[in-house]
Structure formats: C-alpha cells, structure tokens
Length: 233
Image (cartoon, rainbow, N blue to C red):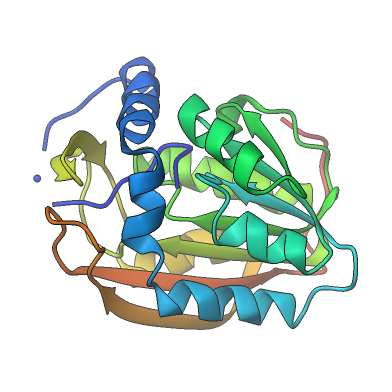
C-alpha cells in the first residue's frame, strides 16, 4: 500500500512535490476497494508466514505503506507483535485504525518520518515504493535498513518491471510509477546492507473489474550483521 505505490502499465517525468499528493489522492479514492482487490494474494500470505516464523515474541515491526491494515498489520498484531503502520493516505490510516486497533498507525510520508537507528526487529515494504523514483527508492531502503536492528528482517515486494516515470491507471485511478527488474531490486537490497535469503515470484490478478494480471516479486531479506548503524538522516 502507499507511501507512494501503484501497479504499472506507460510515461513522462513529474517532480517530487507533485508526486506526494498524487499518491495520497489515488489511495484515498480507493479506500477499502484496495483491500478487497488484493485479499486473495496467497503469495502475500506466505510472505507474512515466512516473517512470523522468524520473529521473536513481541517484536517491533514497521509496516511501510500500511493501507487498510490488512493483511499485514492485522496478521502481525494478532501474533502479538508491536506494529507501527505508516501511510500517506489519511483515508487508509483511518480505515486501518478502526480495523486493526491492536496496531498503531500514522499518516505521514515515510521519507520525512524520523526513524531511530536499530529500533525495529522487522520492516515490511509491500508494494509501497512504486510512486518513488529509483533514487528515492534506493535511498529509502537504506534508511529502513538503518532503522533495523542488526540481523533484523526486511520484506520487500514490488511489481518487477523495467519502467521509470510511467503513466498508468491503477484500479481506475491515474498514477505514475517507477520500478526495477527482479535483479535490479535485489541489487538495491544488497547495496543497502541486506542479504536476500529467499524470494518468490507470482502472477496475480486483483479482484477488480479494471485489473489485469500483474507480476509480483517478494524479497525476504535480513540485515547483515556487519552493517554499520548510523544516526538517522
């Protein structure tokens, strides 16, 4: 969900200042429809199971682009973990707060949120980078790695396509997207200080009349112990 996401399909360039409200507006309009459309993703569920199998009881987890809170924040909170969800869409944050009272949610641009180094045991980034440009995506992954404790886990999912600043329509909403190939995203993760432990690719069709089949890629990563913890930028 958003901190700025969407799923792609064609492009021109837009400024950073223009991107932010665009992301919020698109997902404000979608609201609960997003949750319904993606509720059937078995790959997402398996990804959460992978993470749950590795977390110690009561772990602190950051959900970037938390959307309606389901399934990510709800699944983690129900398992007894302390979850902070961050999303740029006020409508999504309101829905998540009501639907998942066991988690905490904040309406904010994750790029502007202060993150204490080493303060999370895990970070989830499910489809929440796609409306950032490639430099911003790489910078944000590095920031999120710094927010992880050494050997903490980061799960990163995207639509693995070689597209940059592309105009698209996502569930009836105009969006602008950028993504990496599977190899490119793995390189971003590794350069940020992550070890890619496992990955799964699938083809998923959202349950929405305007949806088309889209490739999904899930990277399951661990922060390398040797990664230096630096103060938050």
